[in-house]
Image 1 (cartoon, rainbow, N blue to C red):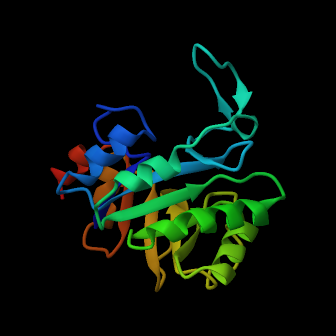
Image 2 (tube, rainbow, N blue to C red; image 1 turned 90 degrees about the horizontal axis):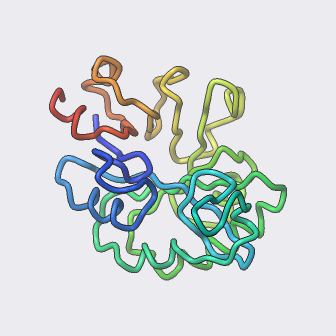
Length: 203
């Protein structure tokens, strides 16, 4: 069992999906990698953010696709680690090919990093599998992609409630309770968690 920090979060010392959180997690011995959320902005930059809207004291409830920001590029420049960087690609619209093409163009500069690409968007993951040599996966939840063909992909990221023992690299999300994590002890899987520090004490 290996540990992946969900949204680059460990003990909530830093906000989720932030540069400081990412660099901190990658520097911790017992964390084997990070998962971060990626969205595209109006001007085709990629940012680290989970929700479709962005809200702070300056910008309230604006769609990220309407903003002009650049974060992913700035983050990848700073990473020197060979640990897993699991990028959760958020793309709800139908223009997934443009999303993928812009991402591929950006990632070409960082081919020495250990990048895994994954999405709930089945067509996006399929397209990336055809167009790149990166490790490409699919998220499977209790509803989304549950009955889709997964043999196309290099790995699968299961919600722990629908986990299946398959002959592929497997990630399971999101496990924060020790008693749930204990069910997967001894298995060759990656546990995505917000509380790596807590789970590792019981490994």
